[in-house]
Every structure is written in C-alpha cells, then in structure tokens.
Length: 121
Image 1 (cartoon, rainbow, N blue to C red):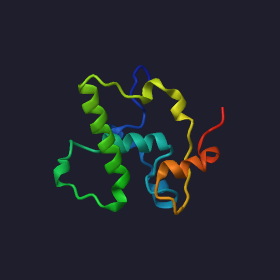
Image 2: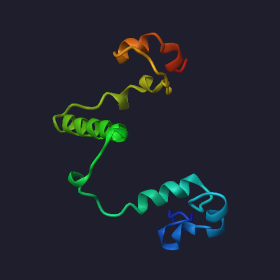
Image 3: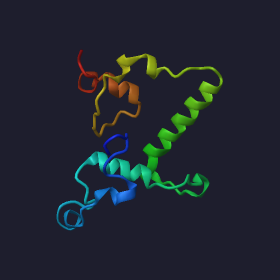
Image 4: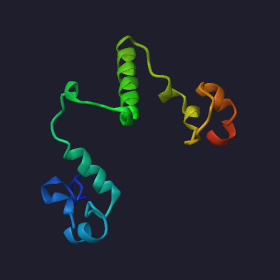
C-alpha cells in the first residue's frame, strides 16, 4: 500500500509497475503478483459494456450460468426472498470433481461420488 492510504502501490496511475523485461522473458503480464494482475484486470475493464451486443458461445456456458444465477438471485431478493447460501456455510464443503460419465442426471451422478466431492468435516 502507498503509505498513509489504502491504495495499492501497483496501480493504474503507475501502469501497475509492469516490468517490461519480465514481460519479455518470464510472464506475459510483467507483474510480480497475481493480486496485482487481478487488480489490473478489474480496474482496466473500463465502462460497463452493452451485453446485448455480446455473442457468447458454448465455451462461455459458465459465464451464462453465473449471470442467470445472479439475475435470479437479484430478482428473488427484490421479492424479499433471501439467498440460501450466505446463511448455510455447510454447502461450501465441496471441491471440484472433473469426470466424463454416462449419467445424464447430475444429482444421481453426485450420489455415487459424494465422498470425492464433499470435503470431510
């Protein structure tokens, strides 16, 4: 942080302290930390984009699902329906599981692999 502030030392005003030699030889960002990279990505995104002009494809299915979920949760909250997750920490005891399976029903598939997907207490 810049002394006496809450502003990160690497910031937009100093081009996030990008090291051009590092950028040429070690990593494409030229930044020392992933935190600086994240900050740069968020701050440099610019103005809000008109999503109606966006063309999402099959590789963007996670983005589509996340947006639909956020929109549904926002609409529910407007109706006074609070989201379930913030008040039920036990649902965060999961980890990723990557498998190719024949089972089309996710719930049924998960029942057979719960030990692999749920973090033990």
